[in-house]
Length: 256
Image (cartoon, rainbow, N blue to C red; front, side, top):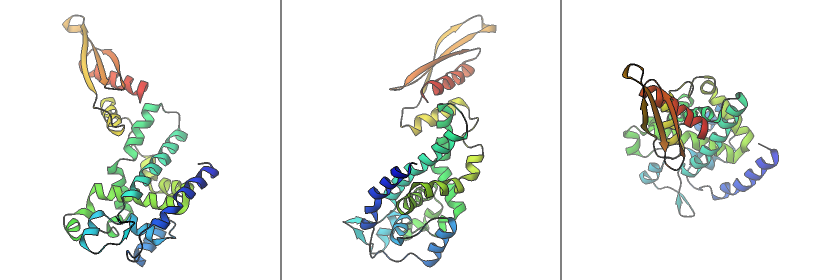
């Protein structure tokens, strides 16, 4: 990110520290050491305490508030989700010349909740996340949803504290194996299209045979795939399944 743009973001987000929860308890020394060892730049401990606090924690003990808002990681998760997406999208863009549809396919896989949860487990987040008693007893410390959200919140916290460039470098370090691996690669076009639709909050694709020609022993099927408010694509093949696959691939190339 351009230095001026990064500085602008940091100034705009600087007020987060002023709104950070006070009196919410101290960040445990073991947790601070863990964050630093992981590469995060810890300055304002309140921001990191917020990033590691699940909403259930507020109901289990007296929780501090900021402007009437109970402290939890949701706002930082919102921010971290965007920073993670930008970091990974930038890496993918510069890593090769894959078409947009293929880039979107890999991006969706690399920033998915399941991937974030896997990174969080490897990092050790379950040992440091703050949960309410019932949520912990219910297995919250091993929940993909909670761990994935907390991982994004930590990314958001680092962005608030240290800006984009430092946070991007942490993402690349934590996601190194994922970026070098096969996540999102060589996926069946129909599965890839379904993931694309979900990731872009679109309706699921629907397939229909619009033409069948030729004798039974050499039939040709033309299939149309449609996503409302996006578009449609057609493809022809010797089987309905193959035509659906080609149509999905064509759709991703046109709209993905």
